[in-house]
Length: 106
Image (cartoon, rainbow, N blue to C red; front, side):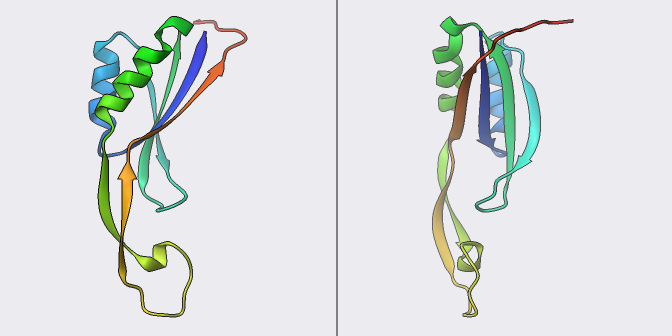
């Protein structure tokens, strides 16, 4: 058994959630905030058999798109100068897969 943590941009969370549910995965969604841009994310938690990990990752990858976004340069750090917009890449997904020592559904 594996536990998968997937951090997904909030704009993609509905599509990811629907696709995982359609594929038969039980998913827990948590509203989270990223530390870099302080933007909203969704963190998904899923327990699955080892043999289905690649399927989960493929579904997340298909429904998590990277995109460009303009943000104030002050988002990147503190500066006493006037901020100017910078283009950054947001979206996609960060996925962690860990072993589960014990699993019980009560």
